[in-house]
Length: 257
Image 1: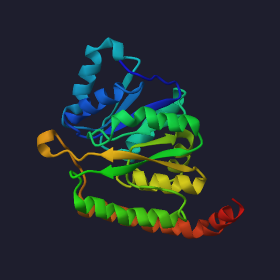
Image 2: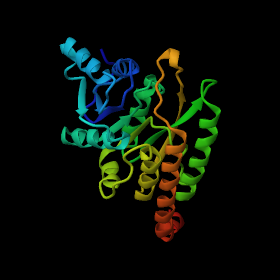
Image 3: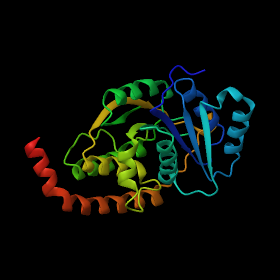
Image 4: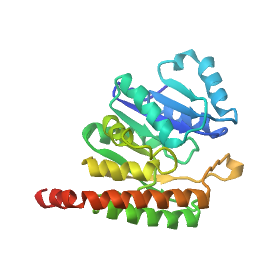
C-alpha cells in the first residue's frame, strides 16, 4: 500500500474535529509513507471513531497505521508531544508532522524524509507556496510572526515559522518542550522552530504548496483571529525575553562559525 517504509522516520498527524478530511489525509499519507500515527486530540465529531473503524476493517494496516486517542482536547503541541514520546519509545528518531485538514502536500513526504535522512541533525521546514485559495489576511498576518521569529533567532534561516509540515529530530524537540509548559496549543509551530534554533538545530527549508479548503470541500478551521493572535503575541513576548538572555551566546556562535 505504501511506497516507503521506515524504522526511524514516521508521520505524526495531530487531529481535533477534522471531519471527513482526517481519513482522506491519512489515506494520502499512507500512500506515500509508513508508518503513519494519528493522535486524536479529544475530538467530538466522530472523526476519530471513523478512523478506528477504517483501521479495524483493514487488518493489513496494523503495521502501517496507529491511532492514539486522547480523552480530552489539550492542543496541537500536547498531541504532538504525546506522539513523540510514544514514537521514541518505539525506536523512532524523527517525525514528520502534518495537519489533518488536507492543507499539507502528502506527495512531498518522501522528499522531506529523504532530506532528513541526509541531514539527521537538522529540522526540515516546509516553506509555504500559496495559491488563490489562501486568505489574504492569513498570508499577510504570518509575515509578522515570521519577522519576529527571524529576529529572535538572529536570522538563523527559518523560512516560515507557522507552516506545520516539517520533519523534527524527536529527541531535540522533546528536550525543548519538556522543561516548560508552553508550546501546547496554536503556539506550538512557531515556538518549536525558535527554540530548536536556540538549541543549535539547523533549519533546512523546502518549498511546499498549501491548500485552503472551503466548506464545500470539507475544509475545517479552528483558527480564532483574536484568541490565537493574542496567544502568538504572548508567545513572542516570552521568546523576546529568552532571546535577550541568549543574545551574547548567539552572537558568539555567529562569530566563531
